[in-house]
Image (tube, rainbow, N blue to C red; front, side):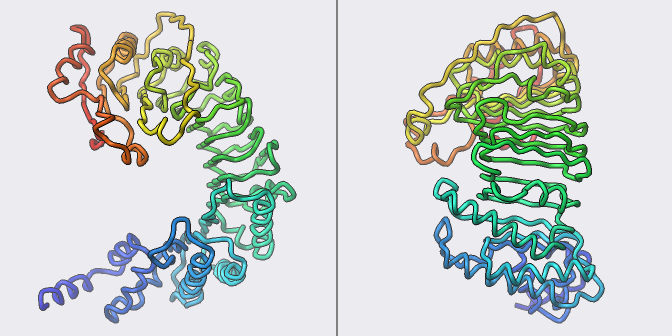
Length: 473
């Protein structure tokens, strides 16, 4: 007991900056509870420069997943009290550099939270707001009227408390249909400091076009997941650096790029391809020359890109890192070398093969109709002199993978390292009997054989085996 008291005394001798750094790494509830430890700690939680108030931390346990309405109501009541405690109490001259607020769309509580945030902005207490509006209900269980009402509630909240928009730098919205509201006006005319925007299962009318023309926008990062847009047209977003588009419904090119001179990272990820026609990546990338990192994820289904090579040269001119993921295990992967021909500056190539025992068990017929990609390859003798690293996830000691690796080595004279990893982790696969689906990753005594097959007496890259993805390389 004496030793514990001595340890506590030693902790209390630390400076405020160090103690605040410690408190900033724990949940707000834990941080607030430290004020009862001693008079030394009493004021510290209210000096934190960054606050994270997450409604999920106020859900009483054990709680159903997803949470029920009464649990969400109680959690929002507790969140409101916490927000009032931290925003309404004087902070002796200190300011909140960032407030990360995650809440449910419950109007009775929002009517109290809104004025608290507005007063904090007006008083110069709050600089940046990171707001996430959560929803526990699956979008498939939301009716069109539900989605429209959620959008109306969000719109009403912003109109009632406009100062919230003035300090909003990060916004995440879920399950909302803005078909009768001007989403563009709110996001790009009112949110003048907005740098990060995430839209999940949102749209402006079923299968509608969403045009973004915002020359004065500060937006750097845009993520769209399962949004019901026919196409998103980025006419002008001069500061956009990162774009993620996941699981779109468009039958053609899901997004078009206009004036996006800062765009460096692009991620396209989509599985189901029902009624979708393959499109040319060059059509989507037309006019862009600044992309340095590209991720394509096919989620184990048919490749939704049309074959091409030469047309990509302009857009791939500055490409440094390429990630091609979700390639079904029975597909050949040699076709991906077409991207290497078009990308003379590439330095890292990551391939992730899709093999999930749960495909048929849990996903049924949706994965049966997968068609092998057929790309006609016409190499021109070019080389990838900057390519030094290849990583393959879902590696198997099979001929098609060895052929692909040797093809990469042949065109990369300065190559250095190959990382071979096992299959991706999957919760659904983990529920199955592992003895029925043994790992196909090489055993330790097979590694020498794999090394010989890859080097073939000609090449000499470093080869690293990492079945469980445990190595940070």
